Image (tube, rainbow, N blue to C red; front, side):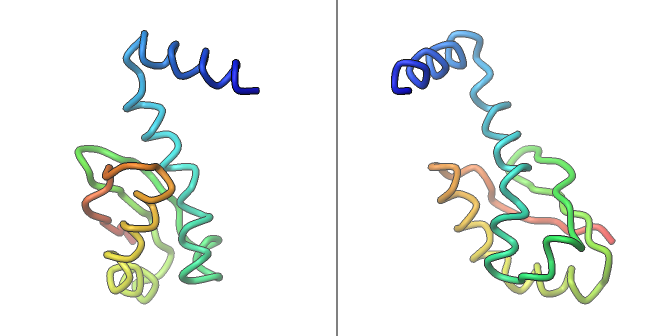
Length: 95
């Protein structure tokens, strides 16, 4: 397994797609991270896009968007911890 991991990492670096891979990982871990803070929010939110350090989230309710804003700092820390580096600087919710 370690051999595959090493080969995959070198291929990602060779084609300079490491930023795109991290962005995809970020969008895919949103549900896991938000569930740790607000268990019901995973079904009511969706990670839409990530660009220039800003993660765009769709929220079904205004109240949920407000709660995400309250937890923003902790959510950013959790997301960056999962990614292994500082990638997210801000979260913006769209209703």
